[in-house]
Image 1: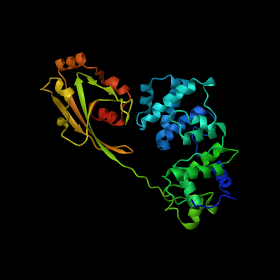
Image 2: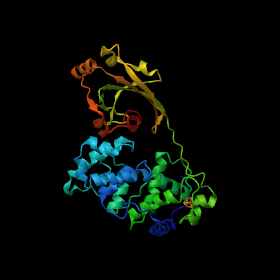
Image 3: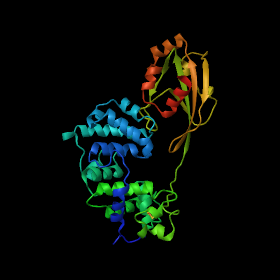
Image 4: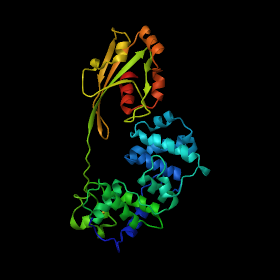
Length: 359
Ligand code: SF4
């Protein structure tokens, strides 16, 4: 990898001077509480600050101490997380809280390598906690840091590649302010978020423009090179709402893929689009309810996740008393009232459907 030599770089001192006057005012800044820093970093991954901030506040309000989070029910944690997506983060958050709560003083480990052993903590979060809570010199590498350093150093390798990310981690660890590593990490991320933005970076206001390769060579729009190979898949979900009176079958998802731990209606998934009525399966046939009465069918717009497009259909089936009792007697499916369903954690797609069509 070829990039400018770091020696004599004024990058760090100029960045830190700029940060002293331009830092963003966020509740997890200027503190060394590892719990709050960890919580903020987990919530903010893949999330815009405006979206994540209310979640951070809700979590801190509901669980002011890590053991309160550890002792909560998983359903309650997932319900609070609902709408943020990437639900494995919430499950790992809960697992990690349980581990920390068993440690002496309920304290996080201070070393980067020990933090990495905890569930849901990767290099980024370990660097953030160790630098911001314990002043250890570990640089974080997120999209902002990659962009700033790729432009500043003139790095023309693909930043989506693991090898380039490792190089950038090495560089930021060299540049880090040893007296204030947490401040340096906040500063470089703030620079990327507010000045060195993905398009139209404000180089005129940039504290490191004097020695920036991209600025010097007019490469701001060419760097960083970020070529991700994303293979998208399509999924077709047919939700059968088996309803009797005000009660509906609702069940916890136990699959390894999306939405594990959340609740949903009775689901039949198909590899391609078919007529909703044709998605019937053995369970529905075995209800011996040849006269199943479909009340309504709704087709929903495409729901876009990071790697998947979800096409969903909601088929409302009003059961008669015999069918309802048959299910209760012969199957383990649980019926919940609408009020109970509203309290359970569920995919945003289902929450939206309930609010638009059922309530
Ligand atoms: S001078 Fe421009 S391109 Fe270089 S780091 Fe600053 S904002 Fe980014």
